[in-house]
Structures are given as structure tokens and as C-alpha cells.
Image (cartoon, rainbow, N blue to C red; front, top):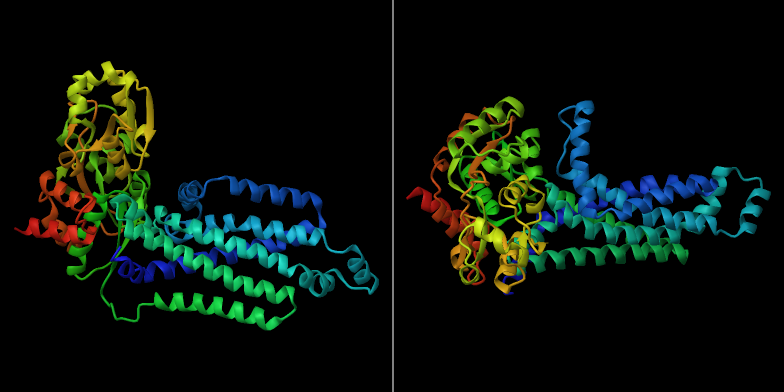
Length: 514
């Protein structure tokens, strides 16, 4: 935990973007909830419908709500144009605003419904218009309750915003997700402390405003609101680049949520920075999101795998061999997405079924065909995508695999589950350094049910014609063998003397340069 302080100090940009995202989401939630509450206060039917909708939104898991905005915005591009962002701030902002809606709306509607009827009658008796009654009577009386709802919404939003990392929005979820994938618990703790600290500060400031309303002391409201606005302004200023980057283009590099992707993204970023480009990262993205993001221009560069594109994008179940698969993908991307397949890095990260060596030996299992015989007595573990991927369906059908149980783990914990006996066989990655380190056996695939998985660099249509960028990345093509990649991955994944992805990427580039 010696690096906890350094990790916290390095979270400045993530904290600033987290603050701005949450502030924008809660502001939009307030802007929608308050007029709706006024309308609902005059119409019980509107109140029922509005509260039912807000409650329904709350039943959707935050991660799913964030992810659902990606295909929605992608579809809206046909109407609103190709410039509509599909990843990053916009979908995160909209999803979190929906999440912030319920506590504000419910508190406001409840407060309006429970106002003293005699007070309202007195206002009517004085001849007040509806607007005067709202501004001079109802608003001051319900303000403390509305503020309580805003406090709750703020704390919820700050917590849920950590999930925005999964759709490419930088946030305090970045260290949490990166730490979970690389078992760097200092990073996880730093992200949690920063997020919890921010929630406590927001709760305290809005609590001050709430107390000011309830005790009729406006100066408390001004202090609370002033400090909150100062924090938001400070976050915005900290992100302004006052440097002179004339002539430098910003390239956005996407990465999926496992160590190899973090390492390769940082390696590519380092190469491009040396070539004079400014670089941003969108890490922790899902497989389908990464491919669609690079095709739509939401990110500029991604590392993907031929087998993933072959099955998920082309919908193919045959296996014509690594070379033919690669050539067909190059052609398909050119014709259908405009994405440029720059080339292969040189190694393959295929799916493979792995077992502990002694367990496989005891059961007499050397291939997937052998595994099918004992599978009904075993537990199969996979990453969150595995059991929904076409590769699993092909493999299952090709070998008639039927397991006693199936369990889902994050890629990192999947190996721990195998080591602890919570899973008997897992869907491993063949370039993972833990295969050799943990003494695992990759089962042979005699029926070739799984396609090849060459690692390839994809360039978005926006930068596909940037010859200087392509020249900078050219030395990486065909330069990474699987043994070197395993070492780089294991340096990040191992329990002792762990490296950061940046350090591992630097080591990888040194190895390539030799």
C-alpha cells in the first residue's frame, strides 16, 4: 500500500472529469425533474406515470443502462449525422441523468402533495396567480425536501459514474477497473477512496444548502452552492490545456478490459507520442463496443483479434485457417466499415480451454474430445463474454459439451477460480502469462472448432489515410511473438513485483527494438 498516496495524486484528470460528468448529469436531472414535479403536483395521472417511469429506470442496472445508450446513439446517427458521439461523455451523461431523476422527482412530488391545504387556500384567498403561488408559497416550503432529493441523487450519481469507464468516459472508475483486471489493489483502493471522498464532500455541501433552506438562513445556501460551483469550476479549469499543441493531432486509443489490451494500448500510445501525437485512452471497453467504436470513429485505434471479428462481426462459424481468415477480414472491413486493418502484430491470443495440469492428468484429459467424456462432472468457468460468444456455441456443439455447472468470472479471477478449485476448466487466453506460471494445460482442439485469433491493429476511417501515423506504427507489425507478449502480460498479472501497464509496455517496446 506504499503507493496509495502516489496513486491518489495521479487521479487528478479522472477526478476532474468525474466531477464534471456528475455535475452535468445531476443538473440535467434537476432540469427535467422539477418542471415534471410541478406538472405532477397538478395532475395525479402525470404523477403516477412520471414516478413509474423514474422507478422503472432505477430497476435497470447502471452498467446496462450505460451500455444501452451506445446502440441507441449509433442508431440516431442515421438521423442526426455521423458527428453524434456514441461513446464517452454523451451516453454517460444521459444515462446518469436518468439515474438521478427518481430521488429528485419523488421528493418534489411528495413535498408538493403534502403541503398544508390551509396555506394553499390562504394563497388562493389572497388572489395569487398559479405562478405567484408556486414562486412565493410552494417553492420555499418544498425546497428543503427537494434539496434532500438532490443530495441523494448526487451521491448515487457519483457512485454510478465509476461505471462510465466501460463506455469510454474517463472517470474514477478507470483505476478501479484497471486495478481489478491487473489485481493491482492499490489502484482499486485509490479509485474507491477518491469516489467515496467526492460523494462525502458533495453530500456535505448539499447538506449545507438543505439546512439553509430548512432554517431560513440563506447564507448557508450561498456558502454550500458557492463551494460546489467553485469545485466544478476548478475541475473544468484543470482540464484546460494551456499549452501550444499546434500541429499535434489527438488520437484516441481504445482497449478492452484485460491486461494485454492495457499493455498494447500504452505501447501504441508511447510510439505515437514519440511521433508527435497527443494521445487519449478509452480503456475497459467490451469486445463489441471496441469494434463498433473504431468503425464509427468514436475511437481511432484498437487492437482486436481475427477470431473475434470472424465470429462476432462476420457471423462465420467455419475455420478456413489463419491466413485466409485474416485476408477475408481485411476485405470485409474495407467494404463494410471503412476501417483499415493495418496489419498483424505477430502473435495469436486464441481462446483455449485450460485445466490444472494435475487435474487433467488425473481425469485422463488431453483434448477437448477427452473433456466431453467427463464434462458432466465438472464446472466450466468463463469470462463475462464467453458463454454468449459464437465460439462457445461452436465448441459446445462440435464436442457435445455438457457441464455440471457454468460460472462467470472476470478474466483475472477466472484463473484464481481454477487455482482454488471453484472451476475445473476455464476459457483461457493463449497469450496469457499465467498459463505457464500456474502450470496449466491447454486442451487440444482436434476438430478445429475455434478459429485463429491473430492480434491486429485497426485504424478508424478518420485516420486510415494518415501516412505519418501508419509509418510510426509500422515497426510494431509482425514484431511481437507470443512468448514476449506472455512475459509482458505476466509482469502485470503476477502477484509479486507487479508492473504497471505503462512499465510493461516500455519493456515490450525495448524488446521489439532489439
